[in-house]
Image (cartoon, rainbow, N blue to C red; front, side, top):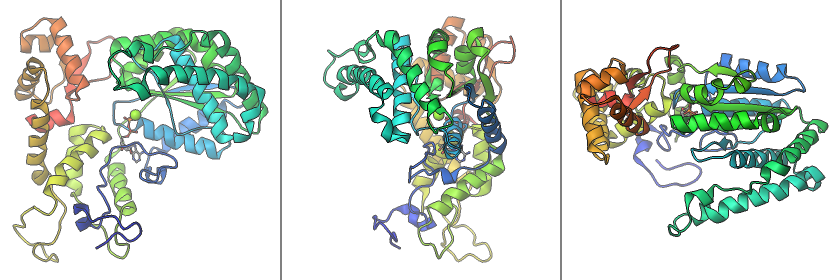
Length: 437
Ligand SMILES: Nc1ncnc2c1ncn2[C@@H]1O[C@H](COP(=O)(O)OP(=O)(O)O)[C@@H](O)[C@H]1O
Ligand SMILES: [Mg+2]
């Protein structure tokens, strides 16, 4: 078998009649040939609500937060929504604006201004000479030059360039910036476009302190940054980050409507994989052999509780080392001996356990790992509180807090959405459950 069009070299996935591994973990993106939005499945209700909110705002402005655990599909849903808005006459770009732990009002405003500028320019290149665009260009250029000069492209050239410098922007961005942004939005309103979508992402990578900081920044910048007519802001993050950054300030809470994202139903997960198999089919005259059985997908998905990225990563790590190596013990009717068949959960499990166990062993802070092992070997399925862990580990609550933070950061523990005022609960993630159960 050879690749029909591009003449790439063969790889083991070809035995399933697939061009490459279908288990990549990137968000789908408009204009991205490897991960096209045509692979999007389900989420009809959520999309409808997003579209209704957007259209309902008319010529005004709207703000929406998408809350959900890591890997549940927030970024992909927003990208799909942006594509739909684009088709309806709004301006949008594939990129999003991150908020980081060491951000300031200036740096966030500078980045948002840059994103609005890019969005107008990408969608309406003819506007580049408009006075509002020219004025924005000056500010965006200084902002980015400062960032680039201090950070990104210089990263790796010695320690003399500190993180602080990398994220510093001229503080006068908040003197001229608000007027410049307002003029940009006036330009959008006067154009043929229905409005502009601004996508703020990555609130999920923030620590609790950083999420609180992001909340203060959003509150301080609410009027000059978020409330322009024609501007539609959409913010993605975990429940806790959205709670800290959006819900804890009345000024922000009152102008943002939150959409809680639930796990994709299992039937849609099967569909997601089928779409990828069909898209990556090597020989169009032959069917694809699914690399895993539907049962294996279902069992793994249960471990991962809605975390699609975790599930896809596990499928990739579980299948890759086993391709072509599974022993055929019995030959079901219709199959010839030695033919390629989907892997079962039982075949994937030892590989996954070994893989994630090795990853765990490679972590640098052994005392945290030991505590995870104590938890996993006692009871891997029940949620714990800081108090119950304090008893289990026989350490102070402040120590529990440190360990929990470390284990969440490395993907072995996840916080559950807080129910009212009750104590925060924590659960082992899919990879931990694969190691311990
Ligand atoms: N509705 C969907 N249809 C198809 N694939 C999806 C869908 N939602 C998520 N995915 C896939 O699941 C993985 C995780 O999605 P992502 O949007 O990155 O999650 P999050 O932003 O919540 O962490 C990605 O590989 C993405 O392509
Ligand atoms: Mg994301």
